[in-house]
Length: 168
Image 1 (tube, rainbow, N blue to C red):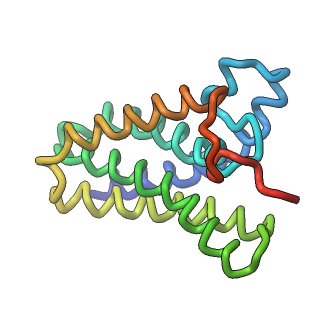
Image 2: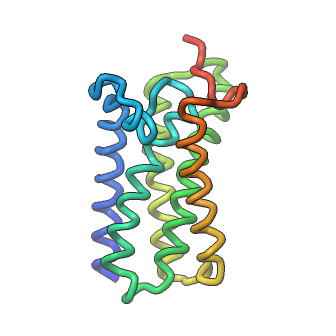
């Protein structure tokens, strides 16, 4: 259990740092279209959901490869953590902007940090409780669908608020 706790804390730090760096990676890459599939290409909420999703997915694959035998429920737990954390970003963002009537940079950062903390805490607890083991396949499919949506909608987004950059 100590190893899981340690790797969870390392995961939180890793996703925070890689998420912050990923925010600038598309621009740094000279607007490389492949880089844009996995990092934000604009300031829309949808694109910023990638900041949690992609690094946490990568770190989850690492955790699964290291801990799957010791923790047989880690796949379902991490999948739900990824999904919950990713969707908490728009939930928090639209909740606070509906109250304030505008977005605030520090609250955007807080939204990102809280979403990561919630994702990893949920994953940690569900790994230990094993309550989702029977849902592993469906949760894995949902993560794959969300990944496919990120790839599909990066350069062809639907005409919905989630996909539009917020007004300054």
